Image (tube, rainbow over all chains, first blue to last red; front, side, top):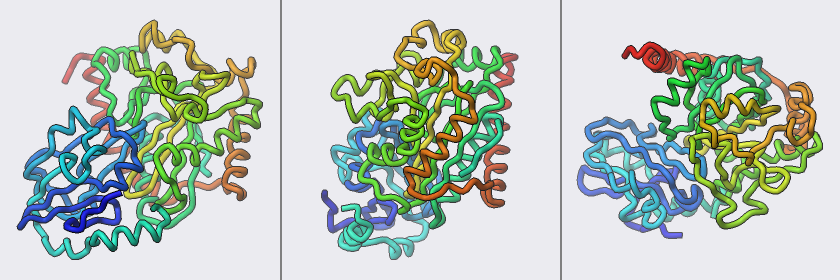
Length: 130
Length: 265
């Protein structure tokens, strides 16, 4: 399993890539493996405001639907529409083509509450998940 | 464990959603809810998109329609016991979605054994194309999924689906005591009653009573969880949240029903 060093991670298994005031958000390699092959992805509308810790997207695999929560607050500026027809891209490339949304952050301080790759791996180990 | 009286579909789904959301913020034990339906109801999976004619057919024949928060296709809830198993984050260790299905429904499999039914998950004994058959007519029971509980080779007895929120899991399943195949065909089409699914009555040749099934489920979960099951009630927090969810969804539901029956918007 891969956990790129340059990303930040949430305890609920989302990753965040920071570029200025914009963040790209997706689900981690651990999360996509645990879910299995995705069959559906529902994305928010561009312009929608999302609060940190609140769901912004729903995914489904093997009849299991899962709400994905945003690690930070902000306005959705871009969504990965290619996932609507090809949700399995998330499984194939969770940190690349499988990104979910781009947010313009309203409270960049919230990034301080996220985990480094090392801390995320430690959390997974501590919970006995890897 | 919660053992509920028959309720309408909207309330049944609102309670399940409330249990999952409350569990996601707490460190608490596993809740198993057993329930029934006041009226015949079709529940649609989170992503299932029924055609308008189907919803109209349901409402016109007096069958309610609700949406589940869990995945999967459309399920007709009629003569059955429905279960929801709610597991807070970290209450069990699971390595995959399939593993979670297996662990959570262990009590159901044990209950079926107690009733004299040799049942197992489809994915445990099948492979390749046998594991999946797509839904040709939206009816969940006419499709195959690895997480079906099957009997007599590959006949589907119990369908399962999950919803996950912040690490907590809700697993839905329905255990049919008998099937009204005429209603299934009138709602889902002639091909829906394709002989690939069965009820407890079909397997046991006699329909067990609700009480028998509920007793077996209670004992099955006690065995699976290796502890006595306490029958309780919804907490105030769960009931309040369920009321809010039901109220929010009832407006949408009323409008859809009026539109389907009268053609009004």
